[in-house]
Length: 436
Image (cartoon, rainbow, N blue to C red; front, side, top):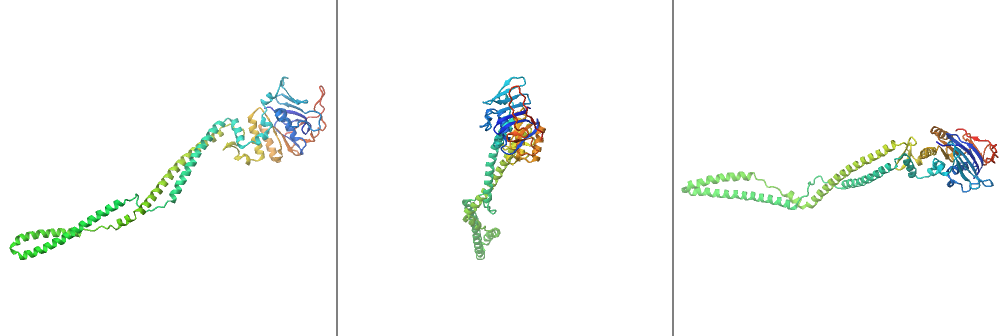
C-alpha cells in the first residue's frame, strides 16, 4: 500500500509553513484551536494528490506574496510537488521519470482524500459502493427485485384473504336452516300427496260404513227370507270376511299432518335467505383458507429469496466483519448508518474506501473531536491493525495530538521557510508524528 512518508506545505489557506512525517500506520492527529490551519493541511494534501478540482477557491494564504508550495514524498518513492505562480503539478518517480495527475489517479482513491463525499452520500449510494466493490451488486439487485415482486403478490393475496375472512365473520349463520334452498312447488307436491292419501283413507272409512249397512240389511233379509237362507248365508259369510279385513285396515291408518309443510310454504323466502347466508359464509371461509395457503406459500418463497441474499453477502469478501447490506442500506453490527456512532461510521467508511483502491494506504479525516479519547485510541489501534495511515484533525491541544498547529505553523517550527533556493539546505526541523 502506498502511504505518505513526508509532506511540506507553505502558504496554503491558513498554513504558513508546515513539515510533517506522518506515522506509517494508525492516526496522525493534527490538533490545535479553531482557525489555526488544521483543516488547511488536509485541503492541501487533497489538492496535491487529487488534482485541481480540489484546489481551494482561495488557495494562497491571505497576506502572503509567496505562492503556495506543496511537496509530498510517498512510500513508493514518488515525489509530488505544486509550486510557482500557477501551482503546476510535478510528479517524479524514483527513476527520475516525470508523470502527472493520471499517474496519481491510478492509486489515489478519491474518497480517501474526500471522505465527506462518502459520509454525506445517501444510504442507497453507500450500499451501492459496498456492493460494487465486493462484486455482488447485480445479483443482489436481481434478488431484491424478485423479493419485491413476490412480496407484492403476497401482500395482494393477504388483503384478499383478510377481506374474505372478515366477510365470513360478518355473515349470520342459521344452524336450523337446511343445507340447500327449498322449492315451493316441491312443498306443494308433498302436500298434495298427503291430501291424496288422506282422501283414500276417508274413502276406506266410508266403505266400512257402507258394508256395515249392507251387512245389517242382509241379516234382516236372512230372517225375512228363510227360504233364501242358503244363498243369503253364503253372501253373509263373504261380507263378514270383507268386513273384518276392512276394519283391520282402518285400525292401522294414520292421517299425516301438513302443518309443517304449510308453515314452510309460508316461510320459504326466509328459509332460503338463511340457506344462502350459510352458503355464503361457508364459501367465504373456504376462500379465506385457500388464500391463506397461497399467502403461506409466497411467504416461504420470500424467505428463500432472503436466505439467498443473506448467503450471497455472507460468502462475499466484505471489507469489515459485521458489515452487510439489508433493504438497500449499510448495516454494521446490526445498526443502520444513522444509528451508528460517529466512530463506527468512520470505521465503516474507512474500510470501504480502502477496498475501492487497495493500493491507497492513507485516508484524510477532518473534525475528530466528535470522538472521546478512548474511542479515538480504539480507532487508532484498528487503523494500525489494518496497516492504514490516517491524517486527521481535531480541535484540541491535548496529548492525543501528534502535532499542534498554531497560527499556520507546527508548534515549535514557527518562522521556518520551506522553499529554498537551489543548492541551499533547509535549516528548519521536520516534525515526525508519534503514533497514537
